[in-house]
Length: 201
Image (cartoon, rainbow, N blue to C red):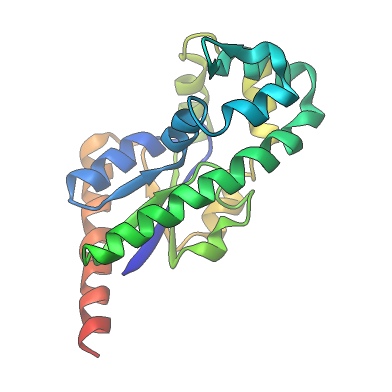
């Protein structure tokens, strides 16, 4: 089974690309969704110890959490020390399940793939990218996004040029959905062929 890592900086079109991969029948483990689920389950108690005022109705309120982190950026590390091991446990369960089902190709959608060293846990990496102007327009169009918040997020991410250099595949999402979808299909076809050859070897 080939494990494909999917990543890209904010506003590059990663979620859209993940949806396209899923449409091609490739199981996708979405790290963001996993974190979302954890913030309503296992992560609540440990996060409450670190940020007691971000728990609302028994769950972590992500907006309160990000406001809190903006004021205390040093606490990012402590939060990551809580969340990352929990995400890894869920990820392992996903991979075991897909292996049991006999899948030839799966995707781990990991926003901070290079930043957290997750490239060591995957066989290939897709980086989604587009021109900085397109990225900026997409991000600033998001509700509640400010220039300051955007810069703070960018500062925590490996530069796009560096991600592209480290990637096995780069999908350019700046030229419309059809072009991106065609790139996704080509990659999936190529990797499925590789998986088939490996299985027959």
